[in-house]
Amino acid sequence: MKKNIVVGITAGIAIYKVCSLIRQLKKNGYNIKCIMTENATKLISPLLLQELSEEKVYTQMFSEYEYTPTHISLSDWADLIIVVPCSCNTISKLATGKTEDLLTCTIFAADFKKTKVLLCPSMNSNMWQHPITQQNVKLLKKIGYYILEPEKGELLCKKVGVGRLPSIEKIVKYIKKILS
Image 1 (cartoon, rainbow, N blue to C red):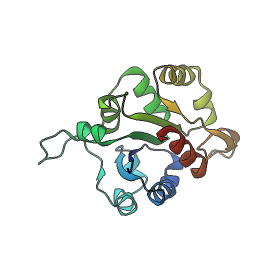
Image 2 (cartoon, one colour):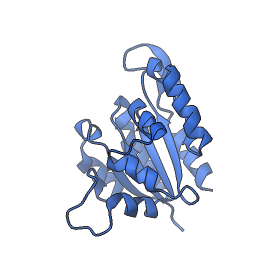
Image 3 (cartoon, rainbow, N blue to C red):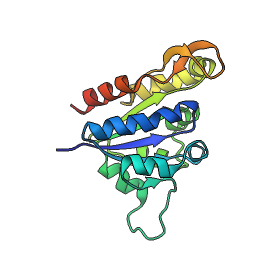
Image 4 (cartoon, helix red, strand yellow):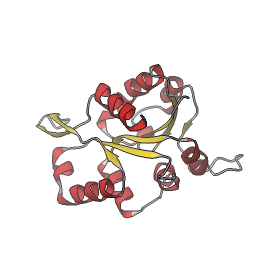
């Protein structure tokens, strides 16, 4: 049976890698639906992700003609919700229970007994290593979130540090492990 994955996309320079991730997940037989935060739509077009996922891309909390709230229907559908790239802001929202957009509401509406949540952070190394970020990551792991930590490499600021999104191959391998 095909597994259902909601790919949550937040604003970050690694957003361009989401296109390759969606293609690889489709090649591996997963059903994909995408949620983009408002800032993510400023960096990459929802239309591009719609073409790759072969599904509507969700960007708004409410749809005008749907009876079932979007965050409920998406969380019920998903076997896995992956947030990639997962911004420092999104980690903070999840750790503090702030549900102000479709992505965070969908994650909070998910039944943790059925639906796994994987965060793939990508950010500047100072942001990643900040004590509050590390405290938030520790809390999220403790309550059951899967977190594929960023890797060391060249960052947008031209410095080398921990903050790079792991390779698409590594993310796909980790998804297979979670869903097996």
